[in-house]
Length: 303
Image 1 (cartoon, helix red, strand yellow):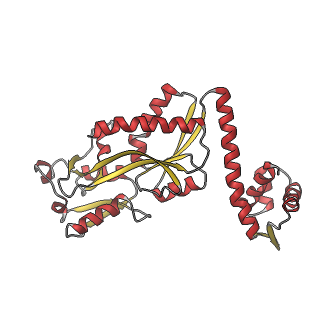
Image 2: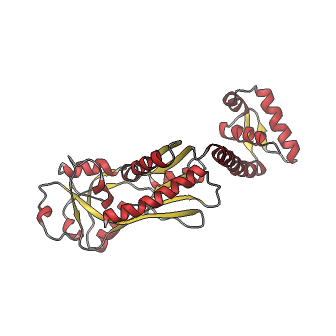
Image 3: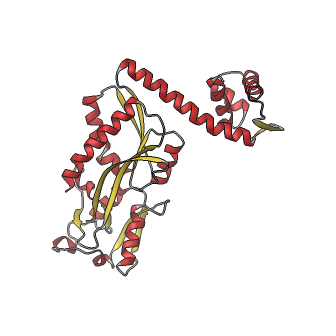
């Protein structure tokens, strides 16, 4: 079976038509139609139902599409590995992560790669955990750095850090001078929290712990990134709760006061995940190695 026929087939499915796919592939529409027909003849199955000008994927077509994506991804990874083996570690790595990871982890990894593998390029995609996980499963990413824990049935996981969650306060907030701060002390405060889509994000955890402490917080702002909420906390708009690694940001001006919470102990875990059983390029393997090494330094700095 010709791998290019599978690529053409996938292009037709994703473009939702022969004409659009042919335009994207820079080939003629009749040529692409012939290739798809030859693929159907070779496999002995009908891949599309043709209704008027629409192509509707059959059950066999849907199965071939899913398997083709896997095969194409593995072939592409193999080609990258072969190229890397002949030229040394090089290539582009696509990494998904949250803003926090992009602020704290990625800069250090890029700095390290500049010394250990200068021919590696990192392309970063920011987003919430659900979106990043979906992109990883769809083979649009090589790895992801996330806070939500995932099942080992689908992912290989590499722990980075389990760290305390700290309260972010305006410098003149009365809690700044308190020797000990407890979560229940914030019952009357305005909260600034992240919107989540998975039901297992940091704000869901904060809300759950508040409920255990006997109160439901008043949320004044729902956002999707920690940095804007940290800035708003520094302006006295409200309080937010972020992983302690935010205290390691290289800039200090305009930051809030970070206050550790005495009780209950609030913690958040950061880990790197990759798709289980997916062949990793030499560049991706090197990236993982650098993250694991950096995690040791990060833990030492946090604790």
